[in-house]
Length: 245
Image (cartoon, rainbow, N blue to C red; front, side, top):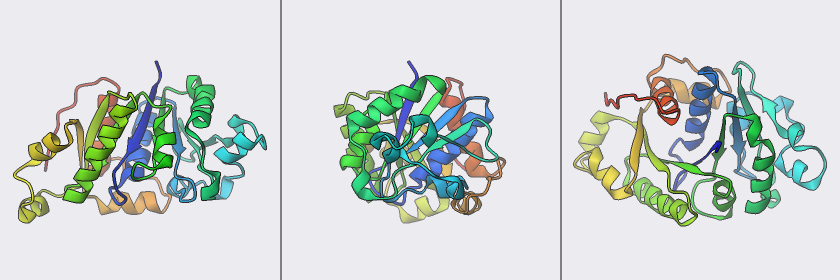
C-alpha cells in the first residue's frame, strides 16, 4: 500500500505546513517521487512556500469541476527534483468533499512513492477531507498546552477515522525556553498526554522558516532541516536516533 500521510495539527502556528514542505523535500532528496497536496481551501500557502505561485493555472477545484484533468493540477517544484504540488482552491467555497479527494488521490497515488496531505489546522470539514485518503498521520505540536491539547484531539479524531499509524512531531523546540517556562517536567510528559509515538523533534530555526516562507530553497545543513531529514528516513523505515540540543 502506498504511504498517504496526512500532516495535521490542532491549532495554527505549529509550523505544520513548513513541516510538510521540509519532509517532502527530504523524501525527494533521497530519491523518492513525492506529491504534496494542499487541503487548506481559501488559505492555500504551499505554492508560495515552494516558489511556484506564478506558474499556477489550475487547482484541485478545477479538476473536480472538469475544467482540467487531475494531471493538470500537479506542478513540479523548481529546484526540488522529485517533489510535486497539487494546490488547494483559492476560494473557501471550493472546499473539496472527503470522498471526492479520496478519488483524486486514488487516481494519482500510483505515480508517487509518497503522498503528503497538508491538512488545515483543527478538526473541521477541511480536516475530514485531508484525512479521508490517508493511511498514516503525523501530528505536529509545539510545547504550549493549547497546542498539545489540540494535538491530542487531532490524534483521537484520526484514530476514530481508522488511521491507526499516527506519529508525533514536536516542532519549533527550544530546550532553554522549554525548561525556563516549566510547564512540563520533560518531553515524555507531552508524549504521554498525546498518547502518540514520537517520530521527531525539530528545533526552532528562523533561517529555515524565512527561506521556506519566501519560496526559496532551504539550506539542507541547517538544524531543522537535518531533523526533518531524519523524520523522512524514519518514514522510510530507517533507524535514526532522536536527539535534543
